[in-house]
Image (cartoon, rainbow, N blue to C red; front, side):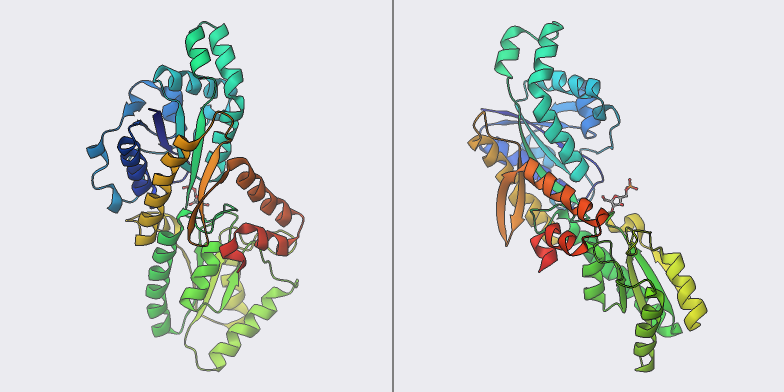
Length: 367
Ligand code: F6P
């Protein structure tokens, strides 16, 4: 029997609740004890009431709920060694020997670091007399399993992250609504979507809403005078009878010199060069809120169940794992590799190797 802590960390994402529900219920079904750790890593650092055993009925109704019911935070204290050491102490005090983390790239990197430092923390806590010799022996390692909860779909090694599909649905609904008013007035709209340094949401939104032009970080315009080429494209579709122009810009969009391309700048170009009545809509956090779409409920549930199985299969030398989905199959891979691969995307963009960035992003992105 294992005692399994579960936390959600970083930006929330639709589908985190279904995932938490699956972890809790699968843990109980497999004769383990699940523990909520509230407010992400902050709860780990604070301990006390922030760590509480979870019961079967505590997660009733979670499937349909947006956000994360166990709270999340971007925790400064956990970035410091001392904060992480306090977290280790709180885990041991609660008898927790495995941890499930649902979060984005940064949160999973934090989990991987915690695992790597674990023996050092345990030794220091024993030396400081904060844990007994027996506990130092008993908690020699902490198994960690991560799942990627992020609307950005920015982690290499999985086709989809939990939340990306719901966010994309919300974007499509919003852009459809914008297009009806744009059409009435023959206006141009520049719509900025989230995604941090990843263009997955923007790319898929552009395909799904029939955008005229798209800007994403992984594929900056190939020429310096991209403004002229954008205007030419938009004008051609107006000349062909289209009543609207739609440009989708990822919040992290850049030009080929790595300078940001911002929605307001695009608007100015369309207004001054083409004379279009242009509006900017920044969709913001509406993309992250609300009930999860079917796919995120399904993905969160399948991955949550697999997380428990992975913990139960693990040997003391099993590395931290990340649960993903590749070609419609739930996968289990070393967390470190996924993080390193994701880091290579950022390096490729910095090094202006954009083709490699796209290939690395994920198999879904590159197809
Ligand atoms: O990582 C998810 C995300 O929504 C990004 O798309 C966005 O850049 C960022 O988080 C916004 O963060 P915050 O909610 O802290 O403003």
